[in-house]
Image (tube, rainbow over all chains, first blue to last red; front, side, top):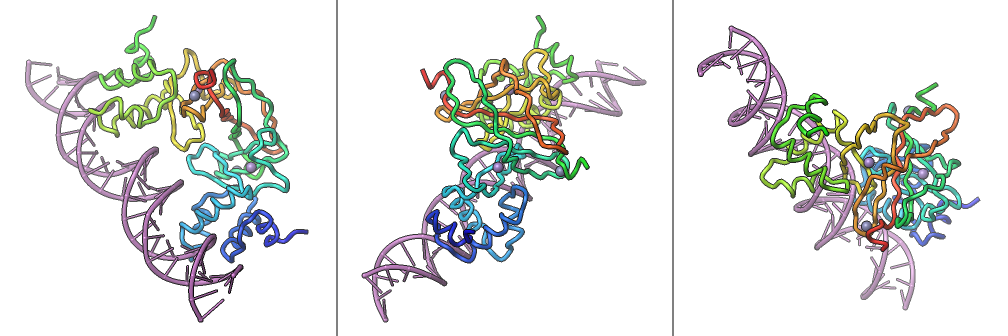
Length: 137
Length: 137
DNA sequence: GTTAATAATGCACTTCTGTTGCATCCCTTT
DNA sequence: AAAGGGATGCAACAGAAGTGCATTATTAAC
Ligand SMILES: [Mn+2]
Ligand SMILES: [Mn+2]
Ligand SMILES: [Zn+2]
Ligand SMILES: [Zn+2]
């Protein structure tokens, strides 16, 4: 079992108190979070630091960005061995219109999408909207 | 052949000079447009008017909103008999990372997406990113 | 046709997200 | 201990989106 410190170092991210806290926050959350969510959780920290931390995590493939159609970017930790940047590994996301939460459905990969002649598909964003399991029960 | 005036009236939208102009602008464009695009095309008109006109068109199912992942909402005219609000009629959208344009692929419907037990799918947003036909040629 | 009601437009202002520049602080390395 | 580089914090900015209110235009009633 790898510690968070080891994980960060393996991705060339220098370990700081702030980064550990933000990583733990993301790990505890089961849903994708916005920058505001993180902001509210760490009121002592500056917005910019949180912003840049997430950017760093994103660049180093520790988190992936989710565009669920709410207009606000959300973030979630990548799975073990997740390669969000590789087209064939993309999973779909579910946005609940009732509670507003967005979750990764990492087991549900995006099917092959056909595009017209002349178009070259490089990436696919697929968000299913509806009622989540917590809200439908 | 139905005139624009007749179309607007059939959707309970009062015909005004501004609305006719905006509709024609959308009809001439072959790609989805942002509010800024409309703003630039009608510098005499106020932003708010354009904003509310699009909102009206959207509520009355004359245009549909497209979230292509750029963070900026785009709009495109609905096809004849398009029912964007109905789940089964959703088409996919293509966003070109080269020219930045987004187009409706109205002939390409979104395949059936399976979601886990407990989740209820009501809507699907699918955006393919890559190189469009104009840029790949 | 004049008047009253209602909708559309324009202006100002606000909120929120995302972003950058720069100074300061902290840690590491020599 | 000193120097360098990254991380953090503060301030400020840009752009999109949205709201309140006054003014103007359009429709409906008389
Ligand atoms: Mn995900
Ligand atoms: Mn479309
Ligand atoms: Zn829910
Ligand atoms: Zn293109």
